[in-house]
Length: 132
Image 1 (cartoon, one colour):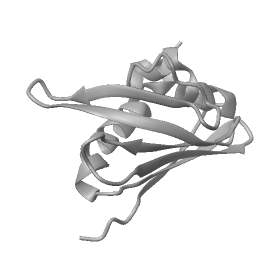
Image 2 (cartoon, one colour):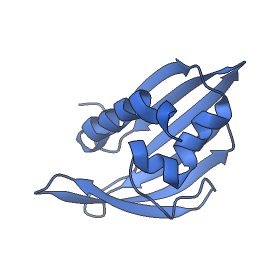
Image 3 (cartoon, helix red, strand yellow):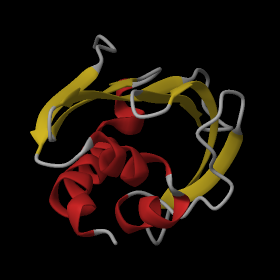
């Protein structure tokens, strides 16, 4: 099976600064993503979090690889006991009062991120605009 990227694109009726905050502010991120208090949208920032099911937990080790305010945030995503890194990116394109949002998950191993990434992305699409 090829490890082709998962890419999604959508336009929101929200200013780019609001979408950026939902993607990069730890207080807003925990509403749709994970609780990562040490996250900073700065190249080189390393952070980790734990997620999974009640019976199987996974440590996620990440490092910010690209950060341009109101434009793009990208970071590696790996599991300590699995070879290879994945990378996730979120790109924003200001279009007047709307924001075109593109995200991609570039998996080291296809099975690792697809389901969780899609579930979190769906949560972002449904609730990011109700975050205070």
